[in-house]
Amino acid sequence: MTVRKASCACGQATLECRGEPRRVSVCHCLDCQRRSGSVCAVQARWPDGDVAVSGQTRVWTRRGDGGSTACFHFCPECGVSVMYRADSMPGLVAIPVGLFADPRFPAPEYSVYEDRKHGWFDVVGEGIDHYA
Image (tube, rainbow, N blue to C red):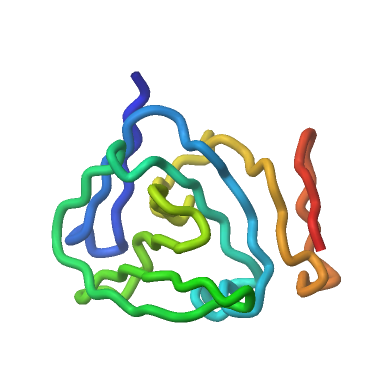
């Protein structure tokens, strides 16, 4: 079984994910742009039971455009967003792909909120579904 390890910038918060992610996606919504500090956020989702979290996190909760709530966990030391859980996807935890620091990480399958995508940025690759 594949085991992937992720960590925040300072290494205080770590995650160990067993198996393959259920979904890898790119989100262009304005909230993900602000949360990630980039033009998009790329995350992978695993079932809660397949993710072991070590270290401390702080939680910030917000309501999204669609009305669902998401709880974002971040490292209290370095401030990096380490995971989130959304009411819209119960039983799954989303982890920013960059935390794995693995250029061979599986490619995204979905690109969402593309109507908010920066015009100069493209998500390319075979088999990616694109949604406005």
